[in-house]
Length: 195
Image 1 (cartoon, rainbow, N blue to C red):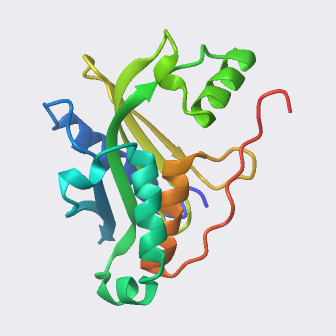
Image 2 (image 1 turned 60 degrees about the vertical axis):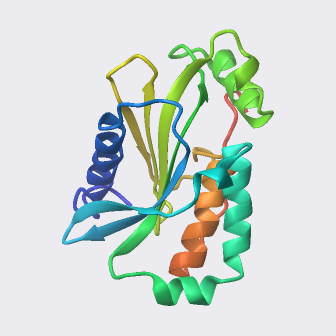
């Protein structure tokens, strides 16, 4: 699905995530879960009230547990979903690393470390505020900002086998979108560089 088929909605959603990150001034905030609405071609985020104490632990694992728990309430969630519900988003602070452009081995190692949940132990890690979203067509969105920087980087990725964003957060968001919107999300896959 191309941006033109969606009338620029993917770019607008990425811009909405970036704007939300830019307006945040404090760090060490609790994670947050959002419903993503698109009404009249304009995206809007609505924070889902989750008590801060619920986020004690690994945010990605907690989000997965929430998604698994909500799956049993899918009919109720669908009936409660307001008009214009388009997807789900999640914001939290995390450790991140960047592979140098074109360095396939560094990218491979970054993916391996991320999947093994050991990015926090890398000497080249940086603290980032990240916002992820998945919509009903399984388009994935990311916006991130390194601590101490005013720059927000965004990424929009259409579903493409072997080129997907993968990991616990995207798996959880896929499950939440399925439960809340009643859509079947295709399996995610990532082809490792060199495969």
